[in-house]
Image (cartoon, rainbow, N blue to C red; front, side):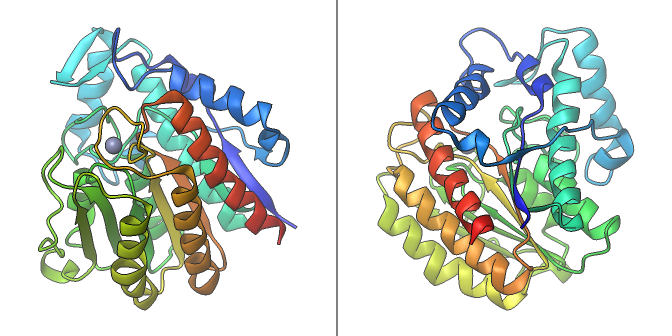
Length: 316
Ligand SMILES: [Zn+2]
């Protein structure tokens, strides 16, 4: 029976946005140590990743943006916006973050893996077509969605983004595209300020964007209700052939970047709902991609329960 895949490119640890930055390499170091200590790494299949090529990145990013990130790293350390800085190794790290997700998608499509989790950084969902933003250089999930559509020929791809911040980059990249459904749960108001419930897509893509902004102080019950009552009926009706998760864990009650109060158990429940959707619609094909999550212990315990659900599902 195909296992759950786990992709954690070593090069992703080399991206350094500067001293004191919350999006730091220790996130992946501590996460890896924790998953090993609880025995979960023995239950997944590790996959070697590759770098995403400039052509693969160019399905969602402008050539100018890719070149600006590459050349900024040559002159690093350098800030690309107020909170997004690069080091010499950041271009390679970002290529491997996107490439790691492409690897996971390819192996799930081939049937090697039932589902997969990608422990990658820098994160991706704020990255726009022509700009780095909010700790993000390349939009990892969007690169994978574009590959599923244009390289692998799938007709419909769903992205659920439960990072506590709205994924402005992912929404903007697909808001005119009826073949990629973007659904988001996020705290509002909060950075980056997009993601109002009225934003439902544009032109041919109208109806294929769905936002659930939730107030600070919300917990598991409110987030699960929004997922079950608002997002899942529309995702079910869309009938995705592949499910991608922009899995940030910064809505945890201990996270320093938000006022939302989810627990690790809440993430497990949301994970099960998404696995059920993938099973009904997409032959179980689901790839989850790390976005935010800045409290080291909370991040580790949330990924433990999340990955545990993926493993349990693969084994059942
Ligand atoms: Zn976030």
